Image 1 (cartoon, helix red, strand yellow):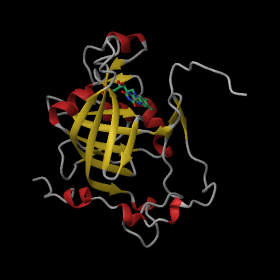
Image 2 (cartoon, helix red, strand yellow):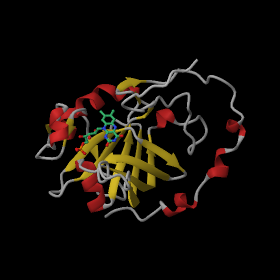
Image 3 (cartoon, rainbow, N blue to C red):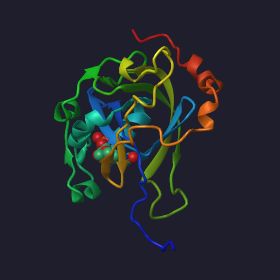
Image 4 (cartoon, rainbow, N blue to C red):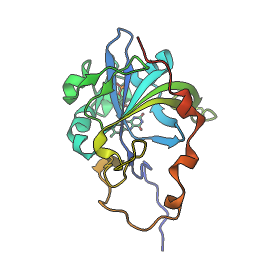
Length: 225
Ligand SMILES: Cc1cc2nc3c(=O)[nH]c(=O)nc-3n(C[C@H](O)[C@H](O)[C@H](O)COP(=O)(O)O)c2cc1C
């Protein structure tokens, strides 16, 4: 028998993404988030409107989505409860957030130049997706109380950078799910995936290449400077 319940949050477990964006003064900001999902070479990001990342993304229309593996969990936790917003919003102050200018320094992570966007990649992350903002949607727009608080932002991926350690042997364009160990946030706690495939997958018999989007060709843009 199920019980009817009212959990305050419904964060059932999604991979963590560290988003890098550029501040007004040209320095980089980093923020961990996990309300993200992918379709083709597009990603939808669920972000609080008052986060520095959201403001940077709306202003510059560029970011890098850096996916940490389980190995980077301590660095992600060092970024938790920090914001790049100098005057910390009241709601964040109440939850113990503090302003941090140098997010790379605090996290112990290192920047590498991107190829097509200005924000840097995070060297330690095995997956680095350079991306541009294509559009955004205001969430809860019809609710007088919640309106303006959160946005769903659609980004288009350009170059994909992968650590060779997660590639499928003999395939330069395939990630091996047995080697890729995403860091999962579930109800504000960190988890990993079970080590092996749980069950044979019918969908897994469909060749990955049948999903290749025209965005892949579009992302093959002239590299920066
Ligand atoms: C693991 C993790 C996942 C998070 N997921 C989200 C998220 O999906 N959306 C969001 O708006 N904030 C999320 N947060 C909170 C942001 O990191 C927080 O708002 C932070 O202050 C943003 O930094 P910024 O203000 O410098 O952009 C998450 C935090 C952690 C540690």
